[in-house]
Length: 456
Image (cartoon, rainbow, N blue to C red):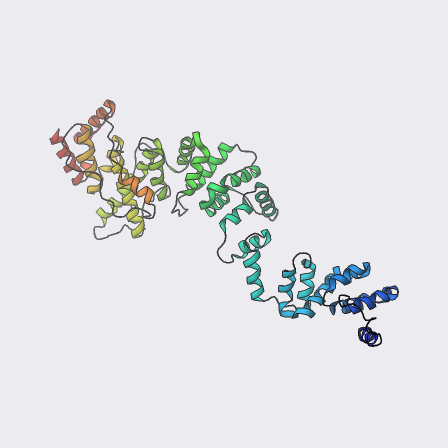
């Protein structure tokens, strides 16, 4: 009734005056009338003021004419009523955002939705299109809900701050989350492609929560966990990062990690049970990575070859005991082929064979194991004719997408160490084997050994 009365009074006033007395066009009649009755306006309830406010086409002059109207113009309920009345429920949120932060805030948006304002798909698309590339909160929401193609540069700018990472870790720990090295490595693998950008930030944050340990000890524990054979790794990013992070003490740190998984026994033994497959002690990809990063003369690669030879000899033993099988029991074709390939890669790179290996080699029949030793390495060591050429053919390079490592392996040539002490040790071991232990060796081994002795 109050609104109807006000509007009627405005119309009657304009009709009752002469042309010269009519209000100028730029003055809103409602504003003029309300200004006249402002002295009694304080008595109206806010609900009536909001109803009056929503019928005003341009509320800015009204807000400027009075402190009372300025308060109403800033009220979230009044703004919600005004935007819905002027643009409809379907377009209210869209136009509220169009008017910018001077109009819309969280309480206004909530008031519009409470009045059944429609949160349309079109409005969300426009919102993401226009603000999604630089609004921090929208970027976080897109990351959280995995919307569309995430801009990695934007994500990185949000995640590089150590303080932010620490805050998230504190929240998780307060919820009962336990930050151990298993979880730390899981996080490193999760961000493996971004470690060159955010890796140091993550490490600094982790060390803060494990303050009892030095940085060097922390990295060593990470290396140990990264070499857990249960992790199905296909890339080298984490090892590259830890290798760069540890710098001068990298090789010693990886040696300690190998000590955790590899035995230091001088003699390698094979498993006699044909139903048991001897698995590699480390992730398969690490053997490739170690050969490239530490070289053929490193103790790390020598110990890696010991482990590879152990598994390769056990594969050969299974084929001897069950001749009809094409793939060893307990593994699939891919693992079998990959294990044979990494053995050939090491053989192509250097003579890793040692006299102490004869005890396991003597149980083998495979050409891939016996021929490189008796027809290439030993003849080269004793300056005899080489009858087996290297490199051996690789059926399929492990992870064929790693073109850098493929090209590196293809350039490897077998390195022969002709140290006088090594020659003497081989000479003595071969003589002892020939004289005493042939009864417990395979016929193939005996034939290769005799052929080599004849060359001498």
